[in-house]
Image (cartoon, rainbow, N blue to C red; front, top):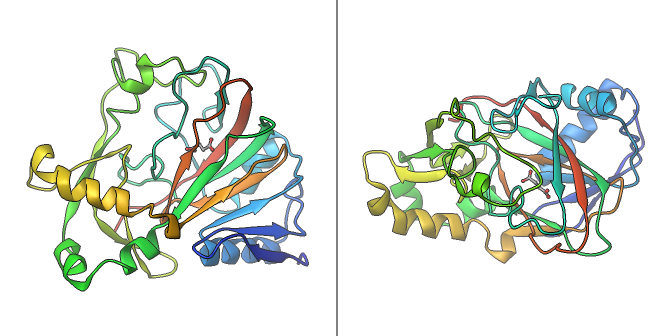
Length: 280
Ligand code: SIN
């Protein structure tokens, strides 16, 4: 078992892990330590890592099956890996709104492991927000109102012909072919984390559009309030990338945002997602 150190970077969430070489085939004991750090801190970070695609996928598989992203599967690359590229001149980037990944799916991913291949000299940080805190700090009245509420999640803004993501100048392309079809699913507004048993808020700007039984217009005021509430500064941390840095987030209880502030430099990341389960 590795002699790991876990160093929180903010009060709300996030910790840097020292003493683990992610390129290695890690022991069950070390994987258990990493998993526990993820559950405790919601997002964990590693510095100075150096691993190839196969090692990246091997690491992800220690936490579950690899999730195949339906909208980045454009046929020209390994479907188990998404390379997230931004280049000078891009008008939009992957993940620039506060979001939880891929929540239009019936079983959204449990997490993602993002590895920095090339980073700008400044900028391009990623922000994370703790959705346990977002839920726990709501009033009792609001919690009661949300208890049985469900929300529709759709990918129509982030992929498909004519979507804002497809129309933008973006180095990482999404599917916008004629065969593409919108995916929609209903999830509870408050979910229970399958491992910790804690409740967290589960709505986000990229995918959540309407409460069950209501129109989008009717849903908007409360939904917008909840989505903005979820990233109050007190609930967040901010990660400054270096080449070789890794972020591993628990997609069940964390929202995140890639800051769109890099305009002169390349930023290249490699992401592998881990399959999740039905949201309850
Ligand atoms: C993402 O939303 O997965 C991308 C995050 C990033 O590029 O920082």
